[in-house]
Length: 327
Image 1 (cartoon, helix red, strand yellow):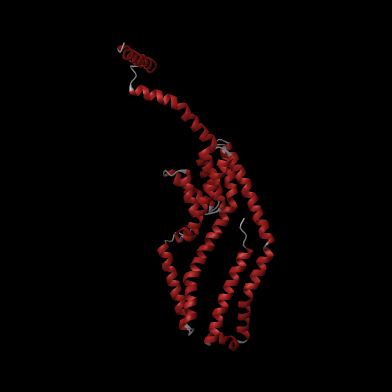
Image 2 (image 1 turned 60 degrees about the horizontal axis):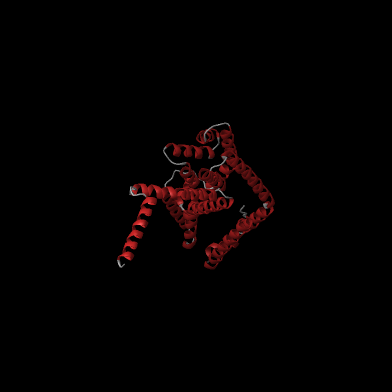
């Protein structure tokens, strides 16, 4: 009687073990189990990847991607504004940074010594040297760079139209770049020629566009790089996207011309107000030289002249900010 419970427990254990062996399979190896587990988990993983890809193609995801690329381009543009080497590239000058600073130093020393030989006050000579050594070269480089950027932007919409027509006719994008480099005027043609050369040595299109943006940081090129980058990541009709971009660029150019026309009166007023004190000073110097000589010979006059120059510079800076519109 005491053996019956033990026998029942053994029979129950054997029954449960047999059922488990039948369902799981005794000859199943670890590799087969791994494959079975992957088979169970595969559809879930594929579904998760499909949901992730679908989420990346939503309008909200596209807006976030565009915002991220705009922020990166803004940081690159701020960096390009600070770097002297980037400014020299934007101006189209082959001069190195070291040569630029040597030329600036020589010009500043010459501008300091020349008026000093004519007997002017040393502080005035020092100010003239600083203006010609630091201000004038940087202003010339900035002026050349602004002119090249303006010419580049004025012809960029035509270049985008060339790409759109080339894609619709079956040409690769690389061949469209070659056409722009060959047919477009400077600086648009040479910049696209450098882009083609960069692609020829193994750079990706995004890397070549980033280098092009360092040489020519314009909003038009920024928009073009963003459109190309998003199209490469998410796909879509590139010709249609670039055609919309061309329309936006032309509308933006038209808006800029309207703003320039509306602000022309303020620009003329700022120019007249800014040039009036120097012009009056020169005319009075011609009519009464002894009257204006006190400003250059007397220490009090020199101090007043220095204060006047600082105030005029501050006023010109404020007026420039007031008539400059970003759009």
